[in-house]
Length: 73
Image 1 (cartoon, rainbow, N blue to C red):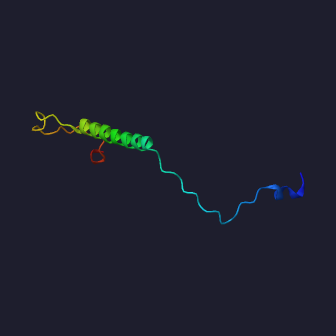
Image 2 (cartoon, rainbow, N blue to C red):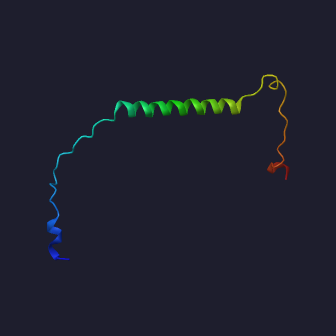
Image 3 (cartoon, helix red, strand yellow):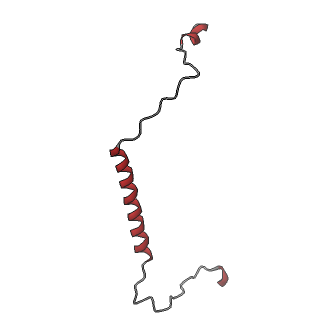
């Protein structure tokens, strides 16, 4: 390995203008927005389904089944 191997590297000007990146394609943008919309709707559905209370049982008081409470120990 020679000592002047660093000189063989191509010189990059320090003030090279920044090349603007092209915007994402329409297809990519629609794919991202579509997947975001799907996730929002799916998570909203799961939240509603997991917290739904049957209207017939909403009038009765909930039963306390908490056996691991620190107040009872």
